[in-house]
Length: 224
Image (cartoon, rainbow, N blue to C red; front, side, top):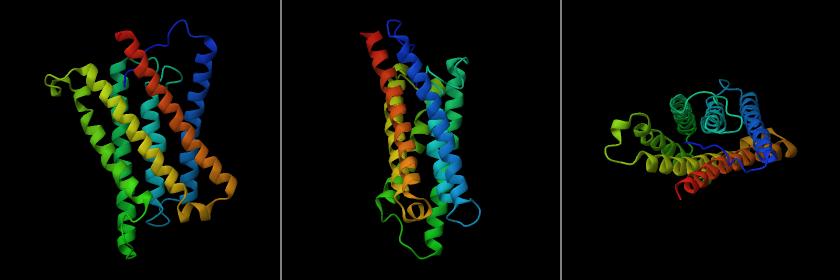
């Protein structure tokens, strides 16, 4: 996902606002992941690995992978685009690994307890999200190893990757939000904590949507 510089005519206050929101997104995705880790206490049961790995995958790794390309508050802002691209793909691979481990944990846990699989919207959307994020990472290989593109326009591949990546992120956010409505989470937290957790997930998704959509419209403006 390549991101262009902001238009020079844009008021500075907009840039400052986006920097603040990006920094807050870093803070929220880390805080939410740590909160779920403390709440689930991974290792205390087989189920405990499911919320831990899924939150680590979609709240932390995937969010940070996209924020690498943010023109406001990226942790790798001074690095060349190629380096950002490699780091982005590594974080996405970590995301896929954690997502698969989280899926395996809940599937095996249900198997041991004799419970049916994928009977809720959370389970179905979670399964779809894990499959899509895996395909997304594999499909990104031509953007790293250009010889795999074989006649495809790299500019078009980057746009397709950004658009599909945004859809994948929204699927992950939706899975997390549905997970917050699970019996385990609602029984573990109070009302205000639930709303705050949902707000963190929703705000992260809004910031990512804004970042990707602005990058796409900026590129279209330059090409027109």
